[in-house]
Image (tube, rainbow, N blue to C red; front, side, top):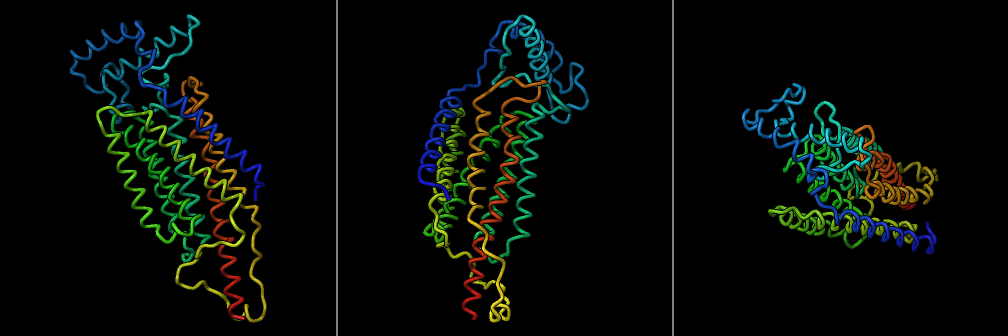
Length: 360
């Protein structure tokens, strides 16, 4: 477990990181200098006129057939080609790369708008599937929180699926679903943390779930208004993430050695009576050092968020800071599920030991 001084420093660090992220991201808007530049407007206008004469058919202006399934329109191609033409002119003139319509000038791959973010979103989803399968195989059904963390994995796989869809094609509905399900994952993480750590909330978990769903519903309704409030969405998401992070940091530091929660469901664990009577010992209780994995995952996720602050143009037209943020979280997910398995194993070892003593 952590020393009190280390815990205070970590909590303080989390607060500072949250303030910096909110101050940086909440102030962002989707109106960018690139799409307001005169050369970009001059490039797009005649191209749009050509599109109007061609009835804005998909795959016009010699769009590759590979782009057809994603329904890139003639005007989309105008914006894309003019964006790259202006970027090349700006770089040649020694000017910095600018954003267009709230995004850096990415180079498409197989029609995907942000190919690196798509790839890393898929890898994150696969990491959750892999972790959930390991967890389900290692932990018996009698464990009280088994279904909780399996449900957690399902919610996160769904979130990363829509993240991949959004980064493939940025549309009104794909953007909304990406933001909404990202918030759902953050609230789900908060819910799972509260239920796992708190004895009171564990007993009333269905009520807590209903409350979280009501909060999520109100969040979605508010963001479904005419103007999407990006600043509010970012501030709310980061605030819940920070609260969840501090909850786990405090648990790592101050949680008792012996759990206070009922770690098994009413169905009994399978205990070998003869082995217990003969005095045989079950596998030794693992060290509480496994809690450092939770700490590593929480702190690691906070450090990964630094990519969102250090925003920069995409390297090779593909790898920007946001893509690297997604890529860096894959390892964090693997560490987190390793912690969940160790945490369940620790509590089940205690439950088995107590059951064995009662049989003697």
